Image 1 (cartoon, rainbow, N blue to C red):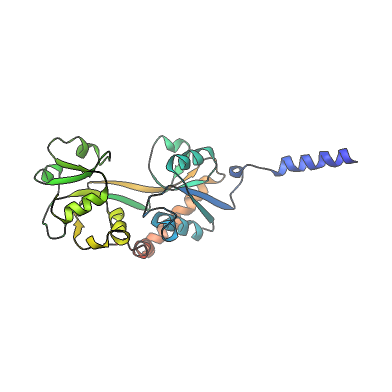
Image 2 (cartoon, one colour; image 1 turned 30 degrees about the horizontal axis):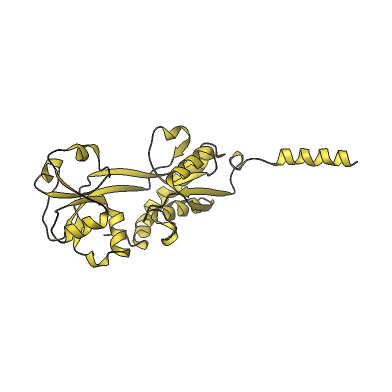
Length: 250
């Protein structure tokens, strides 16, 4: 009798136990790296990107849990199926073999910041040749900019140095993501608020996407549901409202 019971229990366990990604998830376990103001544990709703993605998925009927971990761990975890997806990722053709990309929900604009009173126009890189441009060591700003020998680039150790230098007229411009600078002005360097603004034309742009691992059951449906709600949110003006909610509008 005991042997029969053991066989029954083992059989029941084998047929009822499935890995996390082998069945439609009751809770979507998403992951992101620390990248303020887009993602992070110390900011409102874990960041603007997290807020947008979580809102769209919840509108589509999914429960969402977000973990903030280093980027390499996040990427490997999604590829292995330990997480269902990534909150914020730039498109990469190679990674598309293991995950599906949603429609883009934000664009990372790398823009040129200047003193508010300066009149500078920019249509091509040659227009920037008369100016001294602050950079951060080891940052990549785009192939044309990085390889140009005609641009006068003045490297620094960090972004704060460039904010101080442009505000005090020690450099003319510096390139950076516009939301990153706005967040820093809001939270760390309010004394420079109003002293700098940016040129309308971006130096470069990259679209931001949610991804879902192909090891997640119904991954195509999850992305389709997300895209549908994202389109509705854009039509309703909700994305702009979320940007204002995070105090990132200029």
